[in-house]
Image (cartoon, rainbow, N blue to C red; front, side):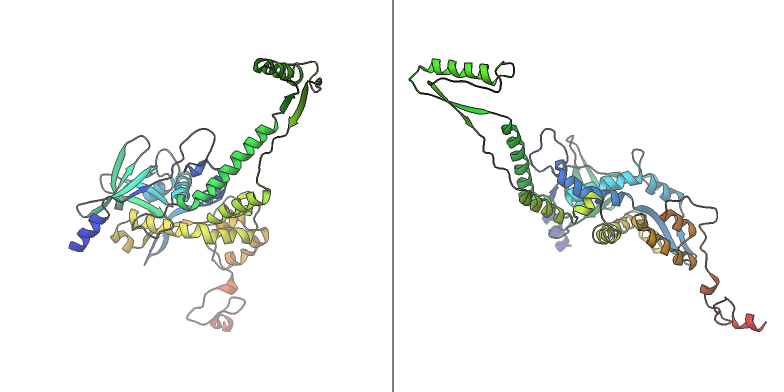
Length: 395
């Protein structure tokens, strides 16, 4: 108990500041990652892929495997709350995860303790609070209000889980230098473009003049020769008293190689590349991206949903949440046609195969089929290539 008390006191005021996406005006990096076009292009393929994951309730027991056996859980996963569908909520959670390496979903239960709604928590910061030896999370929102919820009622998805006991490490410190470089380059290019449209002239007077006369002569030069409404616009004439010289602006703009290297470093930080961002990837390139980036998050979401939505007794009866990838949509036509072997052997249903081609399901297509030459062995003997056993051939 003393050890737990010291642990509780050490983490009572532990606080995590979230990276928010609020702010207006011209972007100069100040911690708002989502306002960067490079960051947003990096995380968009990831969030859309996570949004395409289909959450399913699986029950595996002695009676077999059932998919979405309870209507309440099926509706909860597809319609988590009155304001968004499951796909939209998963994209919002994925954005929060990419920007903060932490994402939170609040579980709302009815009077009987059954989960009925799920809400993503758009907080600005969160801290841990221990109440009666139980871990709570206190969230602070942009409107100044706060909310405290038990950790058992919050689905917590995290990445870069290293030093902190509860939260994942924020990506902001690691991206600070890169984002400053990108912001400086963008601002320099804007100023260079603006300065390129400014024509600067230096008038050297060969005779001594009073300051007010110099100012008047310069103003006359501007009005007569630099104004768009002047009849002599584009041509200037001066006498021997004045020497007019044009000054070209010298603005430094980084070369394309430096810009590309900085962009690639940001891509590498988010585990992506130019082909993924531009959607010009091949089937193998997308499969590599999915296995390294999307699949670990899908596995974590399935485990966390299962742990928080089902009690220990319900999990003991084989209830779990599984996020189906449906990754066959980006497969090539030859790969999809090769799945016919899985249909013949009962590994896929006809409707699942049709879904890979974006075709509607057919009646009876949810029942697995199997060719006769791939039928399972029976006690009477093994079947030959024609599907007959030894007893069948003797008859």
